[in-house]
Length: 189
Image 1: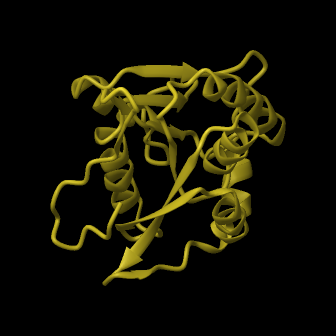
Image 2 (image 1 turned 30 degrees about the vertical axis):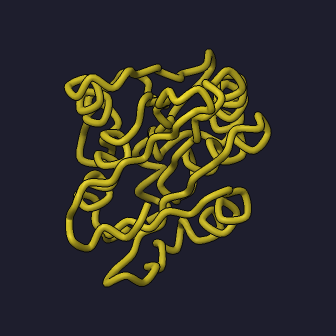
């Protein structure tokens, strides 16, 4: 994806050898998964991505948690990975401190890096970036427990957004998965 400074549409699909167009796979999910859940999610995503249509590429917006587990799963399954990096005025933007180590690892796992204009510290801007990722995909894998959106999390919104646009959605929520308690998140700052 090129930097979208002009606000134009971006197409993120691939064409197979037979001329058919296969949609890429966007992966989104809760940011507050427990460490054990991240391992469960990585395993479930690895299995799912191994069954992908041949030309499909897994796409994640850079960050810790679900994006990093998705990137590791893509690499382990042999699925090509596209990592979406934030830019400001055409220059890659520094991710929030909590995401920097994950961003570095995702860049080493990536087969492709795509630039997208958004502010990585602004929640609404990140949701907009995820919406663009979802709208340009052929499938959404949502790491989601079925809970409604709230002030911290927009996964339910992204599932609704995908369905409203006709993008197929598969929910990934392995048995035993759990989210961090809200008080634990506040303590981390």
